[in-house]
Image (tube, rainbow, N blue to C red):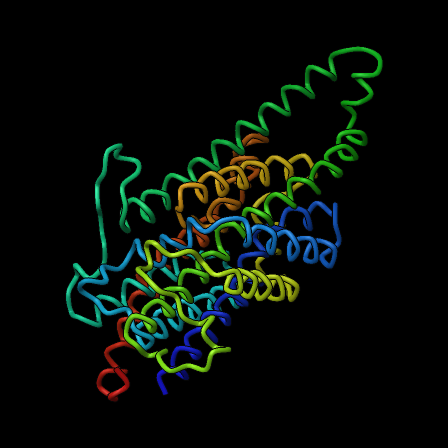
Length: 374
């Protein structure tokens, strides 16, 4: 029975990963589809491949999810708690996908974990809210690993997108004032052709960065479930061929098994291959009109921010970063190029994600306890 519950956690985590694939990957390829550099099918296949490569690249974010948010000395992170956390995140992702809103799967998962942990012991300190360190920016807990990046990474994406776009416009303007070959290269036809090719590289980097950050979150959940089950003795007496399920030691010290990396990366790639056209329509067409040069600037800015965060084990939002980068690029064109009413709907989805998923997971834990499931 215990093994069945652990496998159920793994299954639900993979469902979350699949939904993350078609939900958040839409964000990563929206610009390259909107600029018509790649067809939707080509973009999805490229994103699926680069997601898988990114998922296999590192484990810093996985370790943050597994050991950096919940105080396991207070809350026992069991299978039922993880199931409630995942279901809260899945429900929210499906709601926002149906509405075409680019919300954050990362923050949905964090909210679900926090709400479930608090409900399981009726104590706020079950969540590691803040562990300040020296230097201050290396602090741990929800404040430093989630809330601060939730504000700073989109701001950085906006400013970097604005700066890259401004620099490119300045260079093209100077070329246009020149004579001969440089002036011809500054013409719209040449600019679109050059950045059409360059955007394939930036979109590939964006897909890689998404896999590097987002796929690792599910790796962390699965590893957390297996570490807990191994420590509790739930996996004792398994047949020898199932011993790969056992992960000894503390979550904070573990290495993510290769099979978990491959499984999560593959499921995300399959989810990516199903597409997410509702969200692509919002980001690629409704926020601002994009050309290849704008897509290149937005993807480069966003991928830079996500890759940097991933190297420090910070679970940032692909959604927030690419959306903010698109806004920054659009603002560099002109301030009123942005459709701010659409942006307002997106921001409300961002604000509500963590409290909504925390609330759903909290209620699920309480109901599960009343029904005798926990």
